[in-house]
Amino acid sequence: MTSAPPDAPPAPDATGPAVERRRLAVAAAVVVLLVVGGALLVRLTPLGAVVGVEAPCVVLAGDRDVRPPAVVSDAAARVREVASDAATLTVTCSLVEAAEPDDFGQTDPADDPAAWSVGVDAQVTELEALPVAADAVLAAAPADAVFAWRLEVHDSARTTAVVLTPGGGRDLVDHAVELRRDAGVAEVWFGPDTGRLVVPTRDALATAVAATAGRDLPVTTVETLDDWLEVEQVHPGTWPDTDAVALAVDVAGWDGVWRVVLRGGEPASPDLTVEADDDAQRAHVASRLAATVHPGPLLAYHVVSQQVAVDGVVGVPAVADVQPDAAAPGAAGAADAAGVPACAGAELRVEVLGNDAAAGTRFLFLRATHTGAAPCVVQGVPALAFARQSGTTTPDVTQLPDLVAPDVPPVVVLAPGEAVEAQVRWAAMSTSQDPDVAVAVSVRPVAGGPAVDLVLPRSLDVLAGATVKVGPWQAPFVEVGEF
Image 1 (tube, rainbow, N blue to C red):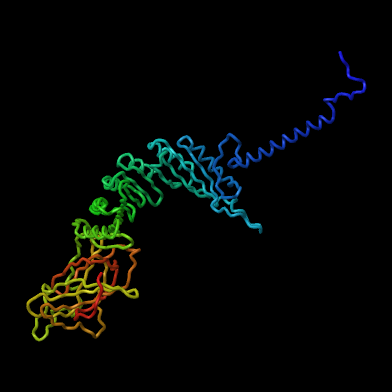
Image 2 (image 1 turned 180 degrees about the vertical axis):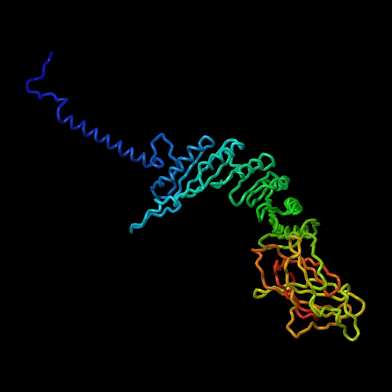
């Protein structure tokens, strides 16, 4: 056995002080790494949750590194506890006001629960599971929370989705499921104030509209997948009449038409917008609409291409007959001229001559042409009644003679072929508050004579409660442009 030379240095002591110091240094470094790594893990885990334990919500706070107040995170955790068995949940806690506090001791907005909202996205795999999921989400989301909720349940393909109202019921969910299952609807979305149904073809549109009858739904639009056709409610619960819907479906299949939108529903009148491919198609479609026989209420239409529109009305006006006593004092029949008899009215051909507008005042011009064989006398103010798009007489219209006392209507002797004209004026009215505009007018040219119903080539803002001032018949006095 060989021994170490006598002058060799001694072997290091494995239990000496230097080795112990190195061991302590390594252990300290490991601890630091664990602490730093743990801190990073906590920072990157939503709400600082423990790894392997699902956080109550994903925090959305812009660039800020903040946590929701306890009442917000506890509510999110409650949703997960109650509704996780009924649906696959995505829960978010969003800071509505993400601004940081200033340097003057301002309270951090993130500390206020009212600055947060909790979003719950609940997904189910089967359509029939939506009501159960809705019940579970609503049970976990009280309406009296100090923060805002946004609750939505939907199927996995998002062909059926409903935004729930905290504290409300699941009725919209039941309606959505039934419409998908029983009415041939391909997609349904309902929010608190609006809704949308999508059907595969335009032939299925009328069925879907009819399927909503009697349901308490928000203002809803039905649209098609095969054509760009939309039927929109103006007020909840009512649709344009069935004849208008049928016409819209038909027009959507015409050559040169790429979009059709029908809006209406009581008390709003139906209104049809047709977008054509080009100017030539616009003229063609407008011509077809003008020649269309439409049995339902009056329907205003607008055929549009390249930001140019052709407007018109389809349908037969139902203008109420004007009573003889509606005419102003001094009507024709009360006077004659040198033995010339008063015009009886049947010999007068009445027409709309034109309209105009200036400085908030609207004007309508009328003409009456004598078609008889002998002269007659006209004196007085014509009596008017207006009809709306809905097919009803415009209510509460006050007619005043446009005369300043002691003026009286002039006496005009009309030879065969001669004409008189009258001017009607009124103050501009707001169609945003009452869109049921006038589309026809009934004119009784002389007291006791017949009334003539005329379709207005352009709708007028003679609305419910209007006051119109009607001037007397007199010799032609103005030149007017066409509609």
